[in-house]
Image (tube, rainbow, N blue to C red; front, side, top):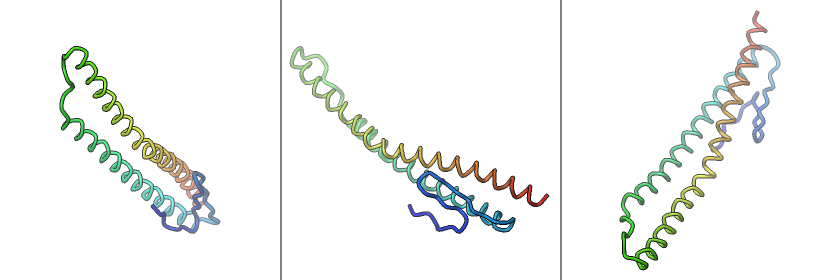
Length: 131
C-alpha cells in the first residue's frame, strides 16, 4: 500500500520525523499524522483480513477431511503415521503462510504506536505554543 505524500511528516522505514516551523505548520503536521495513523490502521485491517482468509481455508480443509484410521494393527499404524505426517505438514504450511503477514502486522502496530506518541508530542507543542 502506498501512503499519501505529506509535506511535514517523513516516514523512512520505521523512522518517523516531523518537520514543522511554527504553530500553523504544527497543526497541519498533526493532521498529516492523524491521516498516516488512519492509513496504517487500514493496512493493518487488510493484513488481518488476509490472515483470517488463510485460517478459514485451513479450517475448511480440516473440517472436510476424514477422520484418522483406527485400529488395523501394524498396517493401521503405518497408515496413521502418514496421515499424521500429512496433517503436520498442513499445519506447518499454514504457519509459514501466516508468518510474513504476522510480522508485517507487528511492524504496522509498532508504526501506529510510534505515530500515536508523536501525535501526543505535537499536541503538547501546539498547546505550549498557544499558551
